[in-house]
Length: 237
Ligand code: HPA
Image 1 (tube, rainbow, N blue to C red):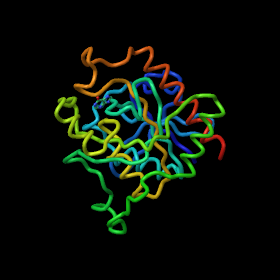
Image 2 (cartoon, protein in one colour):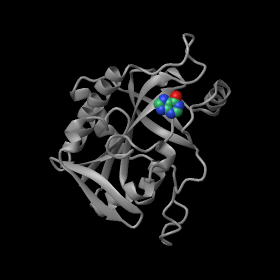
Image 3 (cartoon, rainbow, N blue to C red):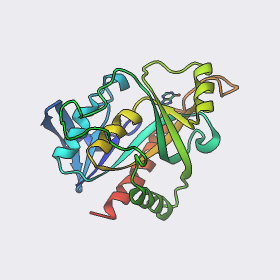
């Protein structure tokens, strides 16, 4: 089984709400849709009701395992720190830095078989290559610039000094969800490729002031990303 976990912009797409189902996991109930053999899981719950620090990441990821998912494409709206991924662009994430705190980001306390999972390769290269090929087949330009995603706790946005510190640490984009989710997915041995799309310059980097792309542009990019993800997953169904 294949899956897509999607967030901002995509979770407003009504197409996915026509056939929602629920699954009970040991961590709570999770709503998802299944369309043409692909599980679609809205990270923030249908209608985007949960902020990043409130998401039940363990329930979401456990639901994938219980549904027999072996490959997932995870999709994230982010802010740009470097030109490796400028606003309006889509890119494959290569690595992450976790700046969250107090989140339940492991299954080790519930399953003693998981201890110290290596994170040398948090993402699956063959799946990333399929995503790149799907984008190229659809003539959609995406960045493979070894993008590093730093994850903050949120829900507040960052200060300019924090963003400058994150740039010095090696981060290209900032968001509030990937590290927690990718860690849990990797612990369970599910193959993951992460696509990020930037919706703003991070704090202090836009001379005109801080702003997000218009909702319409965000939703258009989000739909484009879904086309890439679906094509990449269909190639192995
Ligand atoms: N910071 C944190 N998370 C984000 C941002 C940002 O600038 N843009 C989109 N998600």
